[in-house]
Length: 379
Image (cartoon, rainbow, N blue to C red):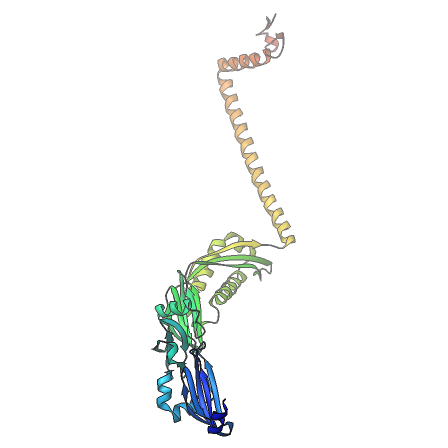
């Protein structure tokens, strides 16, 4: 400040190209200073200069409200304002590049000179869905703070809930929703065929034998909305249904009936399970009673019973074969008794067999001496 300026009560203010400045005199806003040298009144050192670096294009100042109220024309010439309504979201672009995303009831003030600026207002629907093209742009610009992304792959169904209320079913794909003051939830349900095992379930048979069974089942969800909303956890409900139904069915049978009629038990129990699961949107296909596991002492007893049964079967077969052999010998004896020639042939066959094992053999046919001659079999 020169002596003349001090005497005249003025001050020179230099504003650079990368700056803008707000001039206040006696605490009141006077104007916005553009680049250049300015001579301003400053009696009693009551001039204040609030400088803004345009490196930050957003206008944030404690004098914002006063500026727009007292100097609306000046504010309109230097500043651009973006606003959103209660059910709107705004996408603000700077020179074609995404700069900011405003949620509902928000305002953004920027220095116009740092633009060009454009803003697009997007209405927020009841389902809060973000258009796929906008979702990709926000993702590429890493401006995802106001949206949530939920992928749904092939073979799945996505159930959308807003503020706890079911809205709709979403097909396979990537879905995005505005996260603007309302709670968005997605429940993904697998529609492919799945397996469920109920292993090591202990139960008491009608004849009071404790057994453990393993049950295997296959199922798929055919109505995802009903499966999710009818029960808290449909897979847990299916598990409990298998457990309870088979416990009841097997508990009404003896151990022998369970071991002998396993297929029948499966069919009876499966019909009940299928009916119960159909009411909550679950289609049950195969249900198998895989294993019936007995306690150690019961296994020993059962093994002894099986061994005794097999031994009895072997004895029956052995006696049947002995009877058949005896009957065959009796028939042969009758034929020989009635036919002396046949008897003679049998004798010669026996001699031939014996002669192959000794050097010399003398054969006598009783006291009658029918075969008195010495048979020389081998020199």
